[in-house]
Image (cartoon, rainbow, N blue to C red; front, side, top):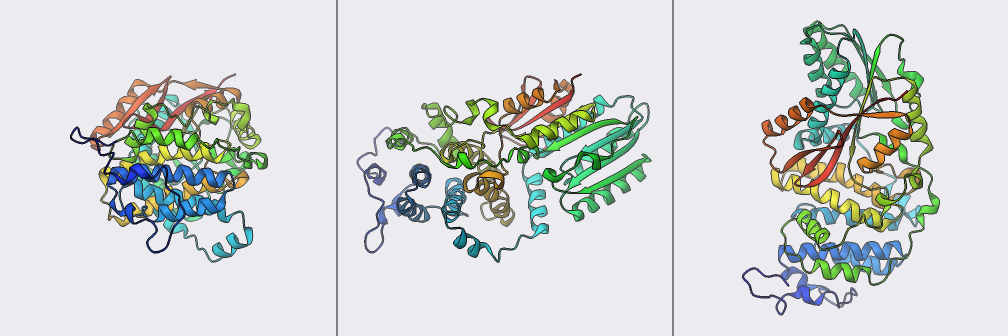
Length: 470
């Protein structure tokens, strides 16, 4: 099964036994052989257990799901290797989904939970620092805006996720160097936390004064889903640009009670998947899953990524895009997670999100020590919460409905927007940024005039630019 030196370990590995083993624990230590598993074997078994557990949850077999969760608890660890860490958060998400079937119990267990805004803001700043994704998106967005606003004297930028002033500080520098001189710049920032907007306003106003750029900052304290377009106060005569970073997918949330009924998964589906899993011998979860994909298992093959757009339409998003089109922006730049986490069934979403978050956890494994408290916070408070929302939630509560670039292209096309090919210079700047940051393993690819940012060969985030098509 695993061959390191040409010899087979089939006869000696305890992993050989687990497809036939019952998950029912006996007396004493229920699974003593689990401690003997090597790292690769443990990773494979955790993948098997997660798929098995999700299948039991999806089909309502909660007793079997509980046994699988118990077995996973002996292997998973939030401060272990990549697979142990990610298994911890998917396990928590599956358990959370089970608890939601008992609303009283679920509410009681979460009644004293405190969400600290300052911690959430801090964790998102850590994500900005640890990964190059947002930095690359900001560089590409700024270049697209500068090219679109050439010669304009009055520029209005709407930032639909005004959380990071670094993007606009860099733009102020670029605008101050324009041969024709800087324009009068107005930025409207949308964010649900007033403190975040106040901090951004203070930093940008100070920078604009130093650079002698006429500048105004218009804060709108609001969730994107509650934003009334009239509040954006777009004026006649100003050239408009819109930036949306990891926001639009939340508007896909719909009341999809019908989709809660996950179809029964064939009993042998995990068995076939398991046989492919057993052929693997790789070190990281990303590699394990990619090897599995090469062996013929693709979570997208029957998932919503191949389904027509109409199956996941959202009146809220459609209306919002139509309203933005009505503002006649010269450019709109959109960054989104490039993965399909909006499947109708639990099994679809679990398979797709395992791939995506495996890559993100692998990124951290390659750059940040396992003992780092900052890493633990990003994994738990950002990725862990996103995973929980994807796996445990349904209907309007499920906000993390990430979708592939192809879906966003369809949506913008239907809303009357035409794609603006990102320039060669924007791509060059992004690639130089990655080189300067010494980000090995990250790649940037051109995809029909849009950009996808990859870890190894797996696309994780996309950036696309749009203009009104009349």
